[in-house]
Amino acid sequence: MKFVETKLPGVILVELDLFEDPRGYFFEMYHAGKHADGGIRGPFVQDNFSHSVRGTLRGLHYQLKHAQGKLVMALEGRIFDVAVDIRKGSPTFKQWAGVELSGESKRQLYIPPGFAHGFCVLSETADVLYKCTDVYSQKDERGIIWNDPALAITWPIANPLLSKKDGAYKHLADMMGELPA
Image 1 (tube, one colour):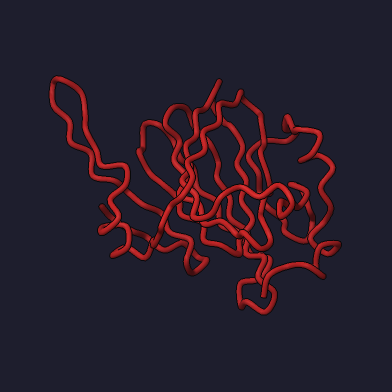
Image 2 (cartoon, one colour):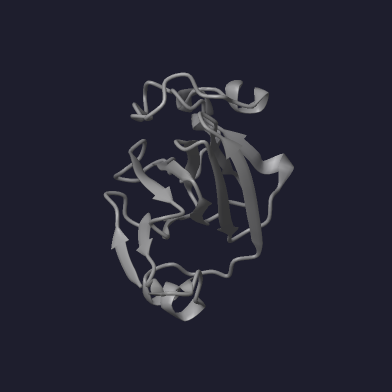
């Protein structure tokens, strides 16, 4: 496995070792020791799975007291995955990193607690698995509107399909009073 830090410290791209032969392929999706050596420490306590159609945008999500680190992988299809630093006082506050993940590339992106997360679907459909370091907490769930000009995320889609909840999120400036330090 190869662990590559993005422009945001702590946000790590993981390139898995793929073993192929005429029967197909094999790879370790997660190995606690190897991932910890690469800067990704669990424990991971919840796995989430989503199936989405082309043009869907999920996010930008985060939780307050139960902040989640997420290890994200597209099992099928292609997504553009985004992490945004929302930690007040961080030298990279409001900065974002985005990478394409796909079933073909077998890459993962680790987004640590203190970051908002979102992705959009570039293929006809996409199946996405993400491991979380804390459980989902509905009362702690928050979000930032996907097209907040203060973040200036360069999404590769123009008019995404959004849930009502994701479409109603506020701008980051409106959330400042509750953001993590």
